[in-house]
Length: 409
Image 1 (cartoon, rainbow, N blue to C red):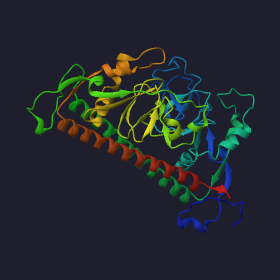
Image 2 (image 1 turned 45 degrees about the vertical axis):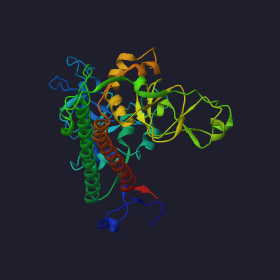
Image 3 (image 1 turned 180 degrees about the vertical axis):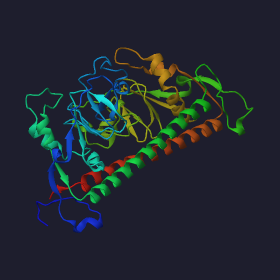
Image 4 (image 1 turned 60 degrees about the vertical axis):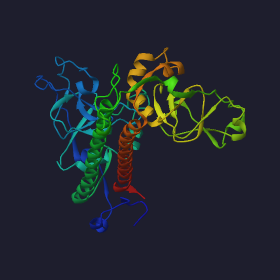
């Protein structure tokens, strides 16, 4: 096969011998929609977002930008039509093309709308989720366009080159990608249920604000003595560090990771200091399993259990509880919204270590603390595993998008 042949990297066995694909233009396969809402009969206003696709305008903007009294110039679109939004974004660098799956409506004339002649066009719905068509749009866009919007004539847009081959192979590719999308959606719903379940368990197993006892207790602890109120300052060893001297090269590429407040709950580190330089550094060391609370910046209020031995500065408060760090971590995670809304300081939304240490929590005996921590930590692990499963599926889908569509080798 020629190096310039238009073929997919991956092909289903049945189609290996069917030869290369050909290139056609969009106007060979589809017609531009130009019908206006002259009589104002259609009042459902739609928009096309880079992430959500075609949605109701009121859902996307939390209100309707266009008024229903001034829709006569809007384009009427049906379910199954495709919409191109020329507004660019990080997720849609030339603007998104999305298939309307929600029903009849009207859409801004700033968009371009087209309808495939063949109703079995799911292949192109998936194709427009790749970047294979971006190069052409960039080549025909007006260089004098607004920085946030592509400027392309409808004639140039409809001349967009598209791959075409026998319908059976196109449908097979579409079915494959649709199947994995359905699987991702199902797994994402499972993740949402797990997160919701954990939130519900935290609400039941930990005391509500203003209460000294939880609503639920494990059977072996029912009827046992009440929980004891203590401040974090009185029940934890606590400390912050200072910022190490980053002008000194010994702080880079060393063996001790420096944990930044923006990395709390993200499991990443970027700056390393050397053990030799640590003794003379203002930074302080934390252990695996210590509680870390971000005090400053956009991440203020985030809580994490340290997964590494590393150094912190004044932007992080470390807590080492007298009996159970995991219990306190879960408790503070449960109270995070209350803490940030009650105690945020300054325009940047900062917290102070003294405020965190003044927070009063209620503690059962150590055995009950461990039981609660084990239950909630188990749910955390389930959530982590489910999140990783979804990420793996997304990567698999990305690979399929790169391999199932034809490109010139």
